[in-house]
Image 1 (tube, rainbow, N blue to C red):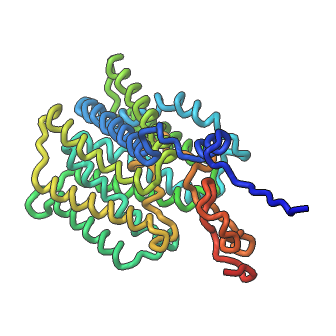
Image 2: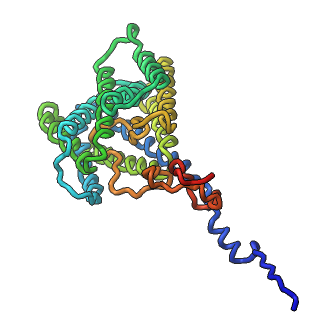
Image 3: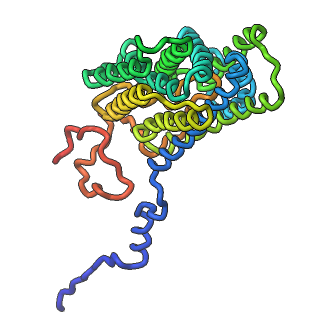
Length: 385
């Protein structure tokens, strides 16, 4: 009896294998990558924010910034309620860190009034150029508040960016006005509010972080409103309602941007506001940006971009304070980007204890397969190369 041999060959061209390979292939029918979508959402968001600031400047020629802030907050409450109803985090409205929350609330109130006044009396491009100094200040504040270690490269970027602020302000050749001080106060207070959120954001409920600045603005501006109130026609009240709606829509686009793309791609899109500001200022308010404003803004933006890109490196920053500031300067008049039960998106790092993390070193047959992730920890001692 002759021995027989079974020749088993794997048909990789069969219909089942082809279907499986098709499922494992990335979706090539989608022409836009996740990062491109995130960048597009961010550009839309900051374009809406810039239009929002144009309306503030228009109303600022007739009304006090106190009155504009008050009604902006008033019309924001219904929209805020719809968003906050989704917060299923258990707890009360009492903050876990009352002193930090008080500091954040005060900083947000100062930012709102100061920024709205600066938009009213200064050219839009110049106001934005000064406000863009906030990421530089966040880097400095992260040292005492977060224990961040800022090395020489980021320090140089901060110093160069602050020099850009001096180029915009032109001390000695340009007379400082109250608007310049207001813009600088808004940049400083916004940096304080953002760094406090970075400090306590993981322990406080999002509803607490969102409501306290809005409620404080409502009561404080309402109290001061009796001193500066001017009667408003329904058309101007309608503009204020549009301002609140635009801020809400822009905030939702910012959330979508960070859910779609990487922070290192999305964060630099905020600097597109200077383009909108220059265009709106030139065509609507007859404001031609000066050479010093353009040069200083370019220096500030390049410094901010370097800090963002530097923080995106895994070995450069432990807290990434600027990279995680997921909105523009904070005024307390609109919803800051919340994280209300947001599911982990693709690309978020997974934290796995090193002593229990699986290693792919001992399983070379898994490398390169679709759906597999690279090792998240160093190989354990029992793994064999």
